[in-house]
Image (spheres, rainbow over the protein chains, first blue to last red):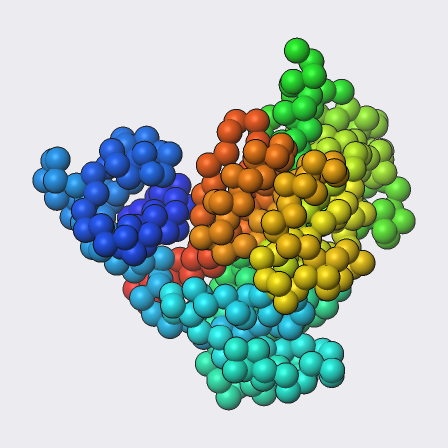
Length: 215
Length: 215
């Protein structure tokens, strides 16, 4: 099956299917109907049928989906069937939180290095990996295969570091710095701008309040 | 001006305009043309004109936008002109990272409490706020005005805590736990599912690789 056949809208929903199917596997559920999955996920059953038709293997009518099969197929589409060596730039609270997030490792995101500019942090271990000074980064990238860099640095440092990463052949950047990065087309950038998510929440709050005080 | 007039698609882009306008203000820029803003933001000038027309006050043709005016108006729409008292549930690395994020406070998101289940953390101060035991939460919410709760707890605790928050009148939940919460319509939930963002990145990586090895 080729990943390319699947539409962007479906792809956006795949991580959520993947999560729910993973939970079902933990509960030892082997098969599930689109109706039951629909109730669990608060998505219409017809949406689920349409989305999952992309993966074939949906079995006979009334027989339900094979949970493990779907989980594995969706995992492949999401690129979770290969190892992604990953480094973290910025060993503050957020960097350490991400370093300690065990679920990433389970899905093939293997942390191979942590870097910071603060000499006080040098040599301190996070999940068995010693924090190194950022000046060591180019050398490290020559000696080790690194695919993904996680940027948890202040925004004034982030652009400069992105440049060094790109010069040294990084494939993807997961950017938590509150700024947009300039990257060439062949470098994947995925932004997590936390303030923007908080502003969306505050917008919805004031929207709700306006609607309910006008009544 | 009423927030309701603005379409959802525009609202989604507002935090990004807000960020860029804030940067311009820091650089003491008073006016900017849609063309210049377009180059900076990598959005078409016509998209910018269309979006910002919602706010009136765009001045004469060729005269550009008043940066501070737009920044203030967008801030109001986003609900950033009022104080939002906020608590954090889960004082691990992620909770502490968010507690230490000074930019939130500047925009009216005022941290008033931090809670955890781990007795080792009790009484430790994060940005001058002592970590309390979660058993104190209902009492705290009766005594203090709390609008937003940030959930940085493991997923098995998150649903239970959401229930307690909702029973005690929380208005909005910013959910970092890797699970969907059941909340009534009048409680705003904004999810930050970090794994899903990482999966989107890994999908784009393998997609790019497939396209370029097929050649």
